[in-house]
Length: 335
Image (cartoon, rainbow, N blue to C red; front, top):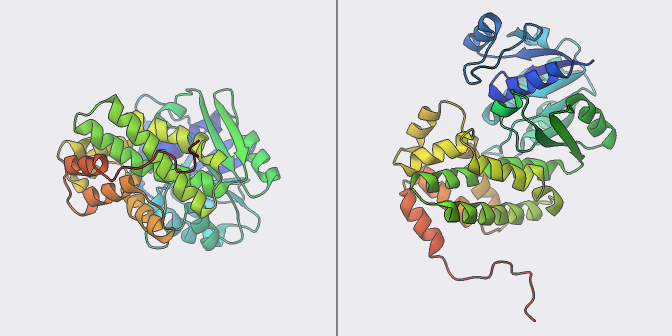
């Protein structure tokens, strides 16, 4: 049994907390939201995970010093927009060599840094790993079979984390490609917004399949330009997470996209979803990275125009369909 602290009591933080508790670990979950703490302590449930009981064996606190008193493992599960701020806040409480595994997904808009880099910059004394894959909290919290990948700089740390998270309903693979894992998990949220918009406009399966396939091509082009591995991008944290996020109503990004396709503004859609829509925050960063690495990402470009320039969603789809003629894969030779 390990002593584990989960920072962040949103749906994914609680999904991970419940998984680790069921695995027999001593789990403390920290939240910065007093109402969230009270709900978990008194009602033993989370409003966004209806019907899922939170066992009394899980300790819930708003006191960081209490939460970070000699844990074996720290799980960073705050929304991506709060990652750097939270890392900076907890850094004085983190001992040298402490393993931190980040389970959120996103890219910082102003620095273009993935989350593991942000954590490493703010907590240089820690060993930072990542966990990602097709893993909706609503399903993980109910014990529905799920597979993910953990990335770490050394195999020993990866295998140790694999043993902590692995269960009969939660299969864990390991990988050294931290960057590829994070890029796949972050960029798929932008494509999921596009897929949701197509659904909101009333388009069909053909459109969805095209967006997923061409979206994966864009993610791969950028990932490879940045040094990620093809095998990672076409694994669980890339194509796997892209499929589930574009197809499921558990996906906040897809739900927000559906609302925008139906005519909601970006702000109104986010308010209606009532949870952090990571794709909105990653979209500008994805566009900036595409420009920095000179990678063509037309879906990302059009999504940015819909989100931040007021382009009607239907026009964005038309712009994508009427682009200049091209080949599907320029690397394939002719005869």
